[in-house]
Length: 74
Image (cartoon, rainbow, N blue to C red; front, side, top):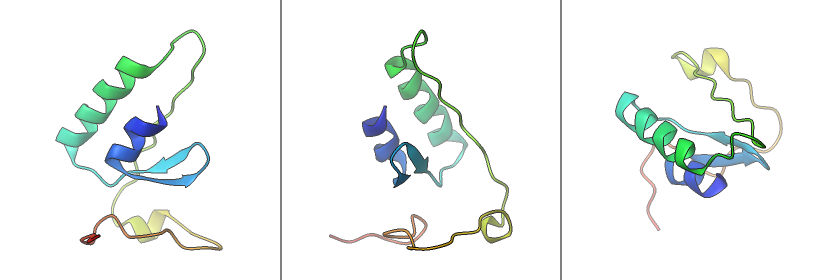
């Protein structure tokens, strides 16, 4: 499950991922997660935040490694 989430976003805690994605990629993410989930054991929750993100997200402590909305060059 984590590897699927990492393809679409970034890990912000052990089992928490933040993904900034459009409707198409949200559908792809959900489809990929449905293929991986063990419905007898796992519980997965997706929370959709409205824009502007700064209004709905408060970060205390260490900032994220990178802002997903900006280009990332290795």
